[in-house]
Image (cartoon, rainbow, N blue to C red; front, side, top):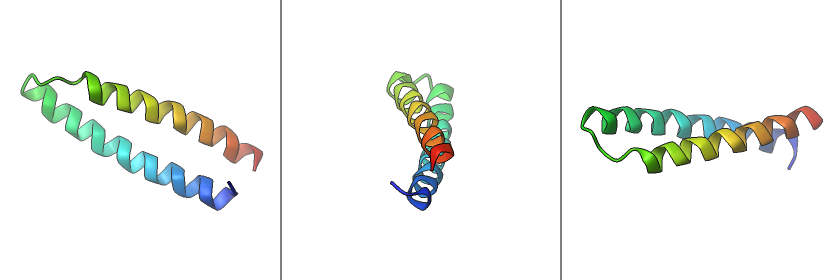
Length: 58
């Protein structure tokens, strides 16, 4: 992946992360099951860390 691809993927993941956080807050307010969303957020955080490392190397 080149630098532009990595930057694009990071932006995309950040948008997904914000959307999932909003969904999580809504589910919490109605006492819904939030564990699947928490898992997705953790996966995005891990992927973002990896992409940021790759970006520094690019």
